[in-house]
Length: 523
Image 1 (cartoon, one colour):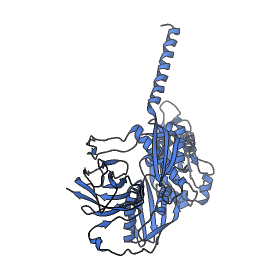
Image 2 (cartoon, rainbow, N blue to C red):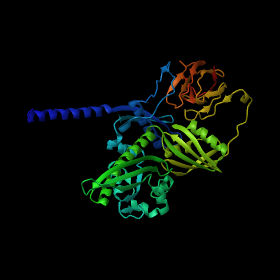
Image 3 (tube, rainbow, N blue to C red):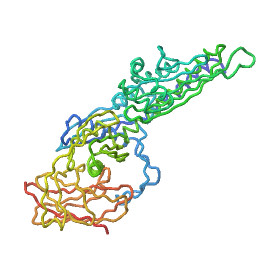
């Protein structure tokens, strides 16, 4: 084969590879329109707007790559029967534009057009920048103790960055991370804290970084060793080993770890050690960055853990708070009590949002007999002080023994009244657009439920009853058509431990209240 023909085939092969790569990139990305909502309540509309955008972006990712089903999930008669769902989102938003935004009643709505991709986020600097912005651009502090052959670089006393710190800093800056000046940290750090930190004490590391206002601290060790001479030469084989940990500063949570090994032949043991440590540090830093990115993605699109510390509380009030938190605030996945010592409680809350989101919601929510003051807030931690308030007693009536009554406000799915299974509740539909919402807790039990609503007196209304899933995302059952008296059957399953019931009325054109009786009975 002549050289000209060889060059031609090489050119064709290269163009084919480029075309395949371009096609793969195009197939990895999709443009999705999605709508997000946020309840404005008593909070600033600008805050509700940010929450609605975040909700829309989560939905865009879910629509684009789907919620991964880990086993057969069967949908039959509009009823979800399988409970084995794996909902870790395998994609991210590369960029987005807002198409439309509007307010409707107490709901802020945002519609976005988002480019969603499943490619490697760590290699997409544009998307990585967006991710960091959505995480409020966390600042990073780096603290590495280095032991090279013939020298020990103590982080606290060194003037210049070590080889390992230089390599790690370069990798993080390549990806757009903001690095805290080490000299600022050295001014406030104490020798005993540094010693504990580099040995792996997350609390000590977090205490040092907190004084520099960093959100993440990278700690670790870099060590080089002489593995002996290379046969037949004057060269030495020098081995470098690096271990790293990434720690959230506000709650001392270790979010990522990495380790790497590298070898460097050199005639000088010290120079070879420096080269080996640099290589190993670069490898470890790349691993750590990937793990941090994956963690942040998971927090944005699934749930982040926020630590809440409540002072001046008690056992009874804390239980009320947890109950309202689970049922009255959108995006709460779980509430786990860690401790209650004297009058201070510590909770871990998994939420689609961050501490600022929780602070906004908690301070705007009505609690029975108390309210909250925010004393401290960071990205992953919220400190609250409980303040007791006087409650107005409601006199009992003869009807109390017969049935419960709705308590306003309960006109959205995030502020429902609690239903008693097999017990009736009396509600009222008033002005046009009024709705009543209720919470039904089933503890994940599978059962058939008979839903019945009937007027408690003369009425001009046709009632509509809708059953929402435990995440308030979709209607899983409803009355087939509005009516003055409505009865239908729906099935609960193991997938959800709670359901939400919404009562509304059609043709309500007058500002007159009409009463109804709602019953949910197991059959």
